[in-house]
Amino acid sequence: MNMETSQYKGIPAMSPPVVHEYLHELGSNWTGAGMAMELGCWLGATSVPLLEGLVSVWYDKPFYAFDKWRANEEQAIKAESQGHPLSNGQDIMPVYMNNVSAVYDDVRPVKGNIPDTLQQIKMEPIEICIFDAPKQDPIFIDSMKRLEPYFIPGVTVLGLLDYYSYSKNKGHRAEILRAPVNFMEKYGSCFTKIAEWPTECSCAFFKYEKPISWK
Ligand SMILES: C[S@@+](CC[C@H](N)C(=O)[O-])C[C@H]1O[C@@H](n2cnc3c(N)ncnc32)[C@H](O)[C@@H]1O
Picture 1 (cartoon, rainbow, N blue to C red):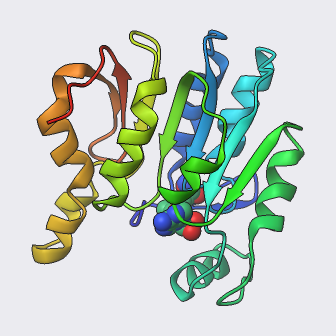
Picture 2 (cartoon, protein in one colour; picture 1 turned 180 degrees about the vertical axis):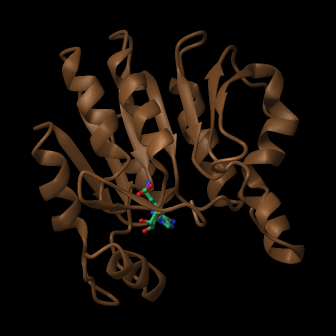
């Protein structure tokens, strides 16, 4: 998320309240079929509402959280504008863990660059997959190729938190940010779009329906 910022319970966010509410609801609809994870967590403003929903229905699986957790200048400015000073280069994993561990005690942070870090975990069926890390290839497509074999047809929800951001940028940057849209243009027959808020933010959520035949 780039344009719409807010906070969730005092945690600086790069996502709007409507998405936090949806994540909470998504978590509370967990069926038990698979684990939940987030890629691109920053300080936890999206993980926390999702986890709150999950714990309300007795979620009992690991919650994998992927991020570099190294604040850059842009993040420091965003956090500062929301009343939370960060310094450029700061290791922010402790801030994330402090925020999420108040809600759930089996959050497993995986620090470093995706898609490489996706090799570090024991994969199991995935019921909820929130992606808010770079919307650029090859990061995006390589991450999907690693995750999709663990998606559950008819169950898994894939949240793409910057699905429409390309449309708010121009030229070369818009092209770079089109990776999730390119993916859905190619493999959209395997998904159903279940939520979006086109006038409020760039997020979209999809239900995985059937296995992808990778081209
Ligand atoms: C848009 S922010 C996430 C915001 C958060 N979901 C929220 O709404 O508050 C994107 C995050 O992706 C992380 N990130 C960027 N490139 C990454 C990579 N290659 N691997 C892992 N994390 C990455 C950044 O560190 C940043 O915290």
